Image 1 (cartoon, rainbow, N blue to C red):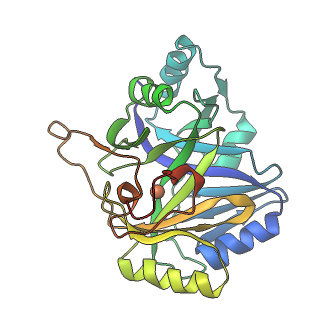
Image 2 (tube, rainbow, N blue to C red; image 1 turned 90 degrees about the vertical axis):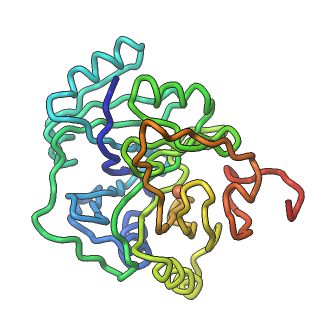
Length: 290
Ligand SMILES: [Fe+2]
């Protein structure tokens, strides 16, 4: 079994790199770490980078996970045995990502995944471009063509555990944080949303008013997820990407005793306060007010 230690970065294409960097720094509140002609590296915490925007096709979206030093070869063999096509990253690709080594493959839905070993930490503290109260890059939602098949991959080939389900969508943890990956039923693959944790509900609400003032489309919230307990706000990013701020995510520390819960596919499973999502993958086709 491949032991994922942490979610590490998202690498996504953009039709306009300048606009994406402007949004990531001035709206989202990330720090620009470095930029070459084709790629901008940004971070949300003390790691080298947690988000990379590359000039090109916005559908090119990669999620990276850190695995233990010396475990990449075994992981590649395990994926190969399970009939996944695995490619080792080139020296240049490793240098660009500031990792010691790297392998790449697609999950059953076709989501591009990278596993990295010894990714660089930064010697300097995170210094945000805007004080959004971000404490770190925390999780991603993935589009899933076949959530049950994908769930089997993440929980048997990898070490993910189901924390809860909303309808068909599993929320998966790889450490005590309630979820690091969530798989939402969809007709395509790709990153469905990118989450950053913020310090408190005050930061969620401050950003709510700030984003409205900046004419950023609010997609869901402010609200509270009944599953993770986190207070959240979802909003529109460049190239149709969805970003989320949240605060107060539940930690699952009782690994032995915890049982995943099934929540029905209803709006009240996504928000305990009554917010209604304007996000296709969260739509429940329920009658209003249920
Ligand atoms: Fe989320």
